[in-house]
Image (cartoon, rainbow, N blue to C red; front, side, top):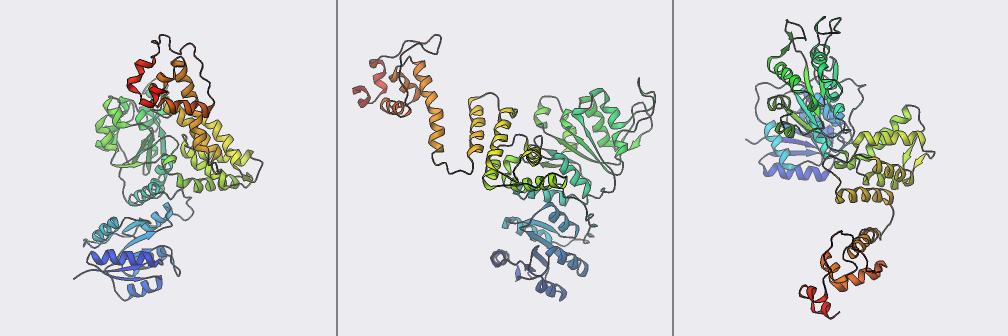
Length: 502
């Protein structure tokens, strides 16, 4: 006998799509646009599975979810929502949702979740306790990449699996570590962080595991390490890729055996912590270079979370801008907003410093910008200076392409939001003019050879020289040992008949 699925969503198009997809999969479907009707069906004992939206005209789907779980704890519920935040994902999980899917969702993913939800289980898991109401949301953004992070955090609230967070500097790796702790079952325990890059290598073992009095010169008293300080809670190992090899060996032993000894101590101490590690480095590359232990990597990388750079989730920039300006106002700075052209400039910028760079910029503008509404000119000035001072990204090198990209980023940030219909021609002219001048200089003004080097028809080259106002002057070559220029006969075989006549 086929299962009956109850669907509640105030969007008629969503209801139709779900009904058709679930019907083709062999399920019976009853759909409604109100929470009240769905609750009537649940009270009457109907349905084998519920799919419900969060925002409905008569009741919030998360409130309804809690009532469904109390009345029929065996009835599984899949929550879908277009208003997807970390709070929504966590609340849905804490109130007993079997699965949480942000809109727009993949129908294949939904059907797979339905299939899993309808499988019989020995016992339905008890709904986890609710998070503290006053907890401040640590993460901002509704991009698909952030949605996936929210879902991962929600799924890890009831377990202590080790997590490896990777991402560029400034992306918010510690915020994710804190969210994993604050919404996890160890939330009442301490959250202890240690930055491996900031501790001298000779002190790392003492900082992690503690030491006994007299263990080494200067050890005048017993010191509790971070493992002891984090007992019952979470230990966040930031920049784990900078951990020296000898400390890696001891950490691996702790993860394998679940206990450690202090430096100079003999009695083993039980390691009662959840480990979350983070790095901006490519640990697989470090393994190949012999700088990081492969066995430790696999011990730490049980659940990987990649934090995207801000340039990969530009749609989150308006939300982040408003959040940082609100924070600045709450701290006593004047209220500020950003106009459309300024926001377009922010969206066009590459953000090498990621979310941290954006936060610093908004705080600076909140404090120093005299206008209540921040305009494009203020943003362009700040971003142009940032481009000049920004360190090159890893692998960027000093290539022409990288230098050109940095220039174009600054130009686009400066003109974003304007109706610059000739921008393409403007940029091409700026690049093409020096290219033609330098090529002619390299060929001592020989247009035939310059055209051959550039891969252009000679007539095309002449036209471009006229358009760009470039005078052809024969003179010394840029090259120190330039071969003599090609004469007309040497070049003729590679040119068209029209060129040879010209």
